Image 1 (tube, helix red, strand yellow):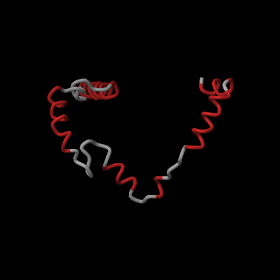
Image 2: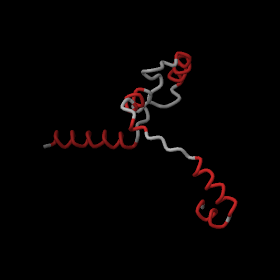
Image 3: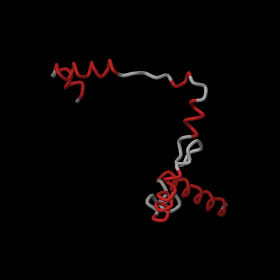
Image 4: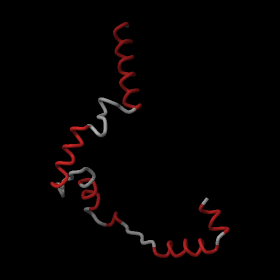
Length: 95
């Protein structure tokens, strides 16, 4: 849809050109520590900032199980793996 809008609407085309000119590319791979910092910051709380103000919120969420644990409501892939293991175990028992 965006390409069609740009073809038909000169004002939107100019707007897209301005946005493209304002975009800035940052090469993160040039910083030797970027990957380490990125991986350390993926989880909350993460290794470089413990976010102590979130501790009570995380505890409350865990108590309510806002997001079901994989063991409670596993993904279809996890369920499929479990079912395959069970079938293999049954097959090995009957062999």
